[in-house]
Amino acid sequence: MKQIENILNNYRQAVANCQKIADLLVIKADCLGKNGKLNSILKDLKNLTAENKKQLGSLANVAKEEAIKLFDERLAQLERAETLQKLAKNRLDISLTNEVLATGLKGGGLHPLTQISREVEDIFLKMGFDILDGPYIEDEYHNFSALNIPAEHPARDMQDTFWFNDMVHLLRTQTSPIQIRGMEQKKPPFKFLAPGKVFRNEDVDASHEMAFHQIEAMVVGRDIGVPAMLYCLQTTLSKVFARPVDVRLRTGFFPFVEPGFELDISCQICGGKGCTVCKQSGWIEFCGCGLIHPNVLKAGGIDSNEFSGFAFGMGLDRLAMMLYGIDDIRLFHSGDLRFISQFG
Image (cartoon, rainbow, N blue to C red; front, side, top):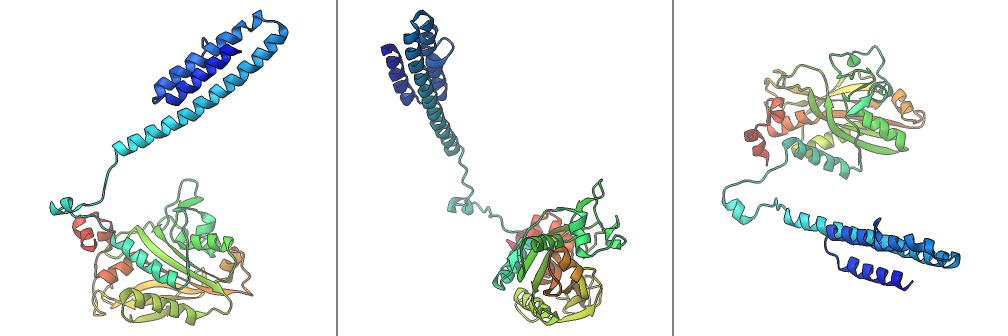
């Protein structure tokens, strides 16, 4: 018993003073290993009487459990200290000091689409909207069926949608599925904003991209109609452009709204005179909008007899083109630092 006590005391001191993981492993093996000191004592139990064997065996097992616990605790401490040491040694300061700036190097900046997205999100936050997010890879139900888009609708065709091989999953063609998921999780009244990148299989030109950004808004409550929708849209545009913007509302068909409209804004590139971006019309087709179709509310678990609402979606890339006077949407994804650095 005295021998076990001495072994444990020496082990405690050795573990407490150990500064390296490799040394700690050696200390453990010397005490707890197959040929370690504690195991050597346990091997000699066969030479003792039954009563002494029971008493000494119990004491040795308690000592062994304490030794294992001390090892685990010290190992965790040494591993943490080693990690902190490596982090301190490999620390990289990415901030630009005055010395670095003096060399003529310039810091990076936010992409213009990131800037305009944050600005628009801030406008909607101040109007009380919740900002939601969702997956790029969507299922057929949330991207089409829940939005009242029938199976025969051309938007489902291969020329518009990037389908996966299972023909059930796809790259989302709009951020509306985010709003469907929002309706499934929250009860009205509510105001959602769904920003994000979307994907459509279409030809690329000065005003069209296969991967672009949308911001869609949805408001659901009681007695909500077209005037509330127009007020929200005009407020957003006047805040973004810091001036009144001429708009016109045309009748349009979208499966997820009824009635549906198309909102055009006067071309901010040419001032309404006509250019390649507005196709010489002086107007830019800016967003689809309307009152939410009862079937869409039903898909979100909302009673259309009690609640109504509106929804609209705007192309963030086109909004940035109007704001910054850019005549080719492809420049946003060109990776040309000469273009991007103008906004940093």
